[in-house]
Image (cartoon, rainbow, N blue to C red; front, side):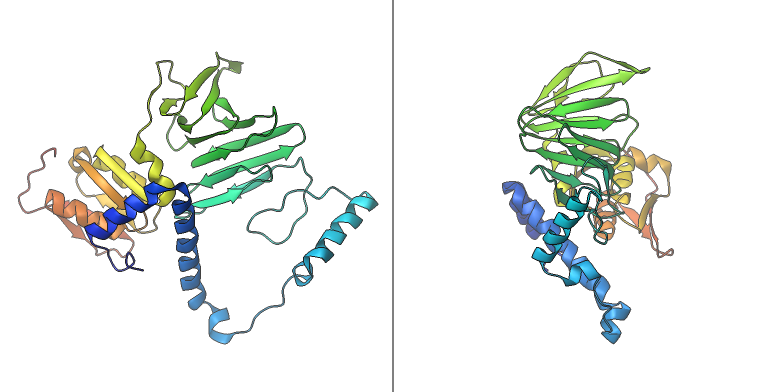
Length: 316
């Protein structure tokens, strides 16, 4: 609640320290933040104003043991095999080997739990397909970014397919991004084996260990993982001498109100700091103060950053 009204730098520093102290803090904060947003939407909805609630679907009006009995009847009759439930949709039975799709809209960061005990955190604008069967654990990351917290499952690794290659992991934690042209991998715990595919042929398998990062098409030695970039799961954008144009692109992915640079030369300026991805106004204000820029708010869906009265644009 203190952060909603435009928190002070002291509050933000304390928040970043708390988020970084334990991975469970980030998950808990995301849940609270999502509930906050949902309650705000509900308050302005027709349901909230007239209190006319629709009856729940039939299956949801029965107790859990009734649902379990229904599963048993379906299996006994040979109609199908009850498998995963599709997240965020009405109750839907699907075959155990059928892929389940998860997708996050603009601005949402969501953590989902898989049946094998693994957890996936999806960044904004992310789409994945998950297939869990007796012979395979497979996730196809089509777009966006995801954190994989993989639980060991015997000798069966979790395979992640991305454009241009595949990754295989046992018990480990790692991030995979397909936001840019080339998929990137950053390993936080354990190790990940990955293989690039080009022209339909598989290349040589490589291994990344905790603290390492690499681009999927990079044949050079892996580089160090940037600690600040791992904080995206808590809704923080951490910049370290990052070009302003790149920073604006990153924060725009989370918001309907977009930032724009009125002069292309502004994109070459570099910024350092930690910012809430869901607060473009605070980000624009910080950038404007730092580089002596003006903010044009004439368009309600746009924050346009213009050079200040000095007219000079120098790298900083």
